[in-house]
Length: 360
Image 1 (cartoon, one colour):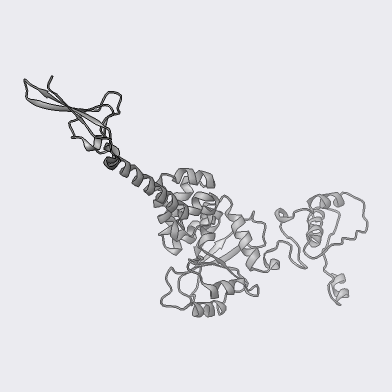
Image 2 (image 1 turned 45 degrees about the vertical axis):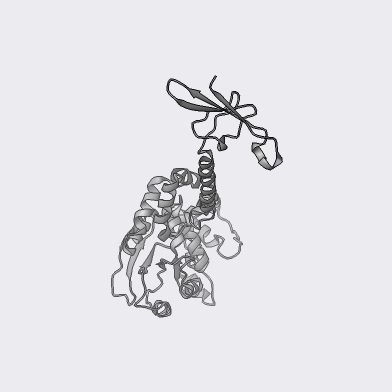
């Protein structure tokens, strides 16, 4: 009986309140007033907080607008984070093309590892790039190691023997000597490895190149392990290494990462030497010399065996340079020298002194 009904007049000037209704009820024992939306109900935002909605009207949430703002901000920040992951110069390429991870400069690996762990994507990216976690951890440790430790780790990956080169070397940094494994398909039993220091404040790049030109190494190939990468180039040193007139080759920072984390460090070395040295210096088929080691005879293995079990005859071996002609003849010689009743000689008649050579 103690109900007050308030009807809002229908007037366009009242806006959303036009024609709405609100009910106020008095509870006599407690002397409390309660309110409820009528038919049609007054919009909840115009009612006191203790008003209940009318039957069939959804319950009003006074802080719903705040929740909408929070969700909007979360979506905006999520989109910005996704854009950051895609556009970040380090983590973006690693996410989109994981294979590029093998050629990252080793100076960037610690920061990249932190970013991948932060996003929880490290295991997935390494798996997509085909990198084993132990190789990744080893590369991370060597990123902060000394140049000498990095040279020894590179030699270990190649199954090469590493030791400090004897003598005094007039260049900053360390000089090492590698004994390469015999199964490498190149005519290179050993090489010198020069570990360039990380910082060259005391020596200008041009002065370093000048000292490298004056370096007395005989006929040994010098592999220069350099910290350079595309963001910190050393153009004079790179130009010096690309000059095929010398025996110097540069292994830059991305190449060292690929060497340590790739599956075939020997292929990295072969590509590097073939790109920066004369092919005749590393080819197992030497001009006017041929292959002298049995394990390095490639295709002539079958023809050599075919000709050693025939009757004596004349054979004409024809081919271009470094295609294995001398290697084939020397392979035949090695087999015939073991025969007890055959005297086999290999003669190179390459100039006008034919009579003395034939007399031997």
